[in-house]
Image (cartoon, helix red, strand yellow):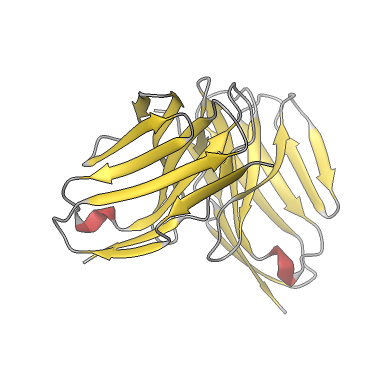
Length: 110
Length: 113
């Protein structure tokens, strides 16, 4: 079945350092979504990318969708302690369902 | 505005006991509904999704089942829990149709002992 993998699984950074997580799908995706889950909380939608090569920014967060629409990345510039959490990508598999990636857990050291 | 309620928030159940987690969505009609499971420190596994009353698609064969008795009600059940059923269960909904944001409930922590 379709698989969506994320690397790295864990990342510890010093506050102020940059952070990137990568998402790779075994199949071409029609779109991809990114979610953030704070410790003890539930995933919350961040953004959706649809077009090949699309790049979107939200303040210090930059999201990119690969040209082949099989991979995506999330880059955070100058991390802050509020960025702590697990970041998930989710690729659409079929009409109604999304397959979530394995997640990258980010810890930011003050 | 739309809201999603999921309960109970936490429960501890013995092996072999039944399970019922309930989820309701308010403020929308005909939503797509989902049950996900997250094992401790792991990713999100899609268990079931539903596009309408009585319509359930199962993603992972296991001893869990789901039902949608009403348009905005989604129930996750088990007749006999296993230790491996422990985890964080998340109900979620999205607007009918494809390519829409998924909104998650607060989640239910299940510990099977």
